Length: 103
Image (cartoon, rainbow, N blue to C red; front, side, top):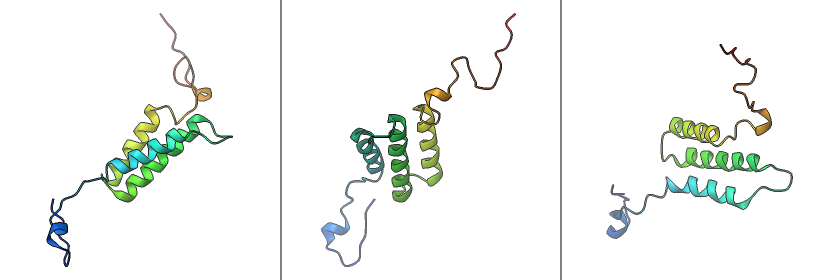
């Protein structure tokens, strides 16, 4: 893809450059996650914030359509177990549903 800018020198007009848009939100989320949580925050809350910041950066930069960015963010939060903490999970299956009788 050639970027055409009126009035710019030819070397600048035809230089495709590096597409950094897909990488910046991921790098931002990783950088925030690696800083570590501030006092008073749990690790899960800090990772959720890092994911949120990455999703917002991706929505602003638009490397993908907004719906895809949102779906990827929700999928990652679910896959990483950030939606519900360990105290909200039931060891025997879904919370609120009785264990079916065996037999």
